[in-house]
Length: 75
Image 1 (cartoon, rainbow, N blue to C red):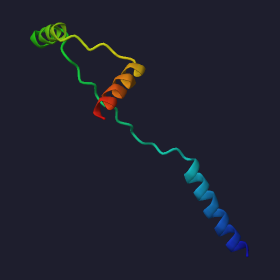
Image 2 (spheres, rainbow, N blue to C red):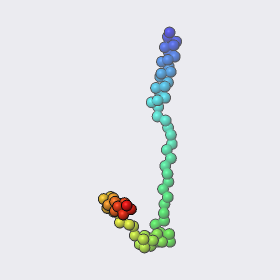
Image 3 (cartoon, helix red, strand yellow):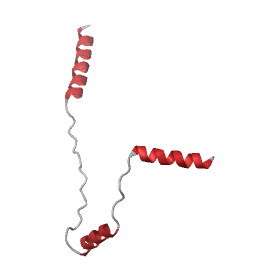
Image 4 (tube, rainbow, N blue to C red):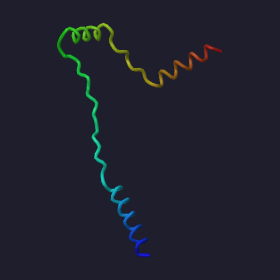
């Protein structure tokens, strides 16, 4: 019986050791794509931003209200 007990004790210890050991794994990070801050591409981008300004953000209440109007017109 002691051989069986020793066997199971060894198996249990090995599994616990495997569970508690941290797995060493190299975590790869994504490289950020850098854009040129100076140069023709950057200047062109700045000009495009000035020509096409960003749309103003509307509230959720306003968008829901307009959707309701459109739905009523459909009937």
